[in-house]
Image 1 (cartoon, one colour):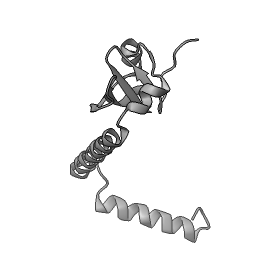
Image 2: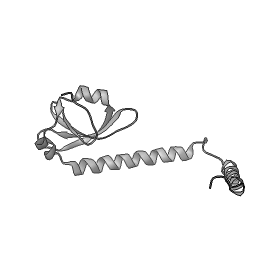
Image 3: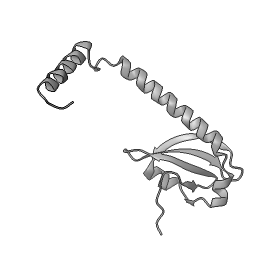
Length: 121
């Protein structure tokens, strides 16, 4: 049976295990890496699913997955995701391609006019 990389699964490499948190639309896998023998988290990362196939030797056994200290890795993963979202939001707020006040007022007027004519609400 062929191996399929999926979110929520643990995969073993030669000396570590990766828990796949998510796979995005661009086929990048977001993961946390754990030591194969003691389960200690060694950080989070992202790579293409194709690269994950190259890295993976096999799916981790339930015993190996059970050794992983997921609380610490999940916490760090979430902190990193929140920071990435904050950086993205700040960059979007500074981006001049956002709608101007005049654009927003014009859109509000257009919607009010549609309602008066019995259009979508």
